[in-house]
Image (cartoon, rainbow, N blue to C red; front, side, top):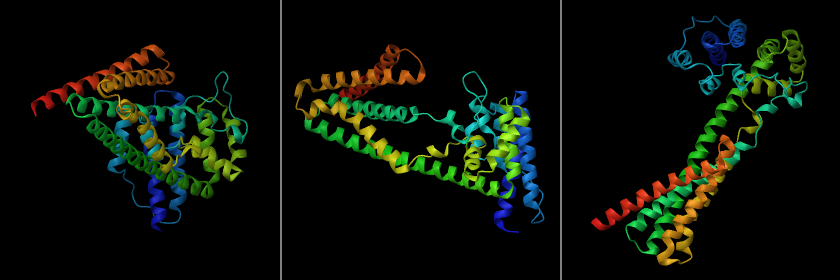
Length: 339
């Protein structure tokens, strides 16, 4: 027995335990059937692995027991990211049904997973990055302006805040995306090994997922068996359907860090513009006006993702920025007067 075999056996037993917990908490009959099947499939795969060694008695870890409790408490749908992280299969069930008006079951490899793809994520992240830089640096500039510092001091403070915030955001984004990518790559690697070890069982799992979304079971099995003949296509489908991941969108840590740095910098430079152009006494009201207009535009853009009114979203963001900038200006005035 190798350590790798034991770890994979434990992983399958844990997946079976958690799949059963999801089945128990899932309110829909289709979901119950799917995750009961997934629990059975995981037990069968654990049994295949156990043929190579004498398996010890299995006891779920404290982490697995906590996840099972959280699933029972909050429901499987809300716990989807956690379930995906511990490799519970079939979590793409919560992405919505495959068969619905205008969205037929995929009939070829190229169509698999297309419903997961979206171009809005990067735009949304960029808008939030600009928003973070704008609000934080506007508040900083308003605060030091309220303390009646010289324009040069305001610029120095604003540039320092811009650089500190941009590097902090970039570092945080790099670590976040890098850690997430490593986790996803590990899960995909496990799925690749399982596909090589027991392809028929993996095909059955895919069939159960498609059946849970409305496809006839025999049609789902036929589709999955055809799909599993192409190793790369099968791995792609398993990654999307079992793990709920899109292998095309794992993200680049360096790209994410650079984008975050640029977005934050773009937002943070806005309140500094009048000071850099030598507006002198009118620099503060111009900076406030620029920040207000920019925040309104950001709020309007964000309304595209929420489906709310552009006017309402813009005004809300402008008010939030005004409150933050006004508060720091007042605090700066009080502190500046005291010293």
